[in-house]
Image (cartoon, rainbow, N blue to C red; front, side):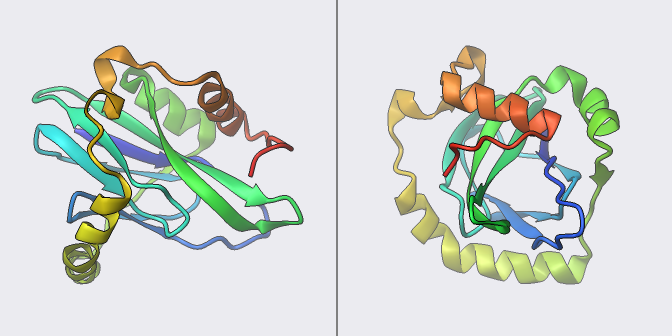
Length: 168
């Protein structure tokens, strides 16, 4: 099971709902301050979604639970424009705590919406797969959660709702 969360929330600024995919299959739609859960086949999988996002590969093991957070960075001149996003793996133990602290809503998609996403996923998967080539050890391995200091700082800032003035 993979929990995918988008903790960002901008008051009075309507932000787009992001589409999220695992390989060529849709995980669902992810609005502001929400999370979803998706069953993922074991193995190395490509997680991709927002246009502003760099697709990333993750190793998923059978019978384990994972949590991915979508970290958003905004244009310094216009904080309603998402400049880029990235996926950060996080400790799955406290999903309930994250949901409660950040007031996240659980989201599901209608079958009609998922059918639309399946079509898009089938068409776009190869393009996104080429953007995130399989780099062996460079792919995210949840056993060795080695996250750069910058990504860790951004992750914790996003949990606290802080903005990094130097983010791109």
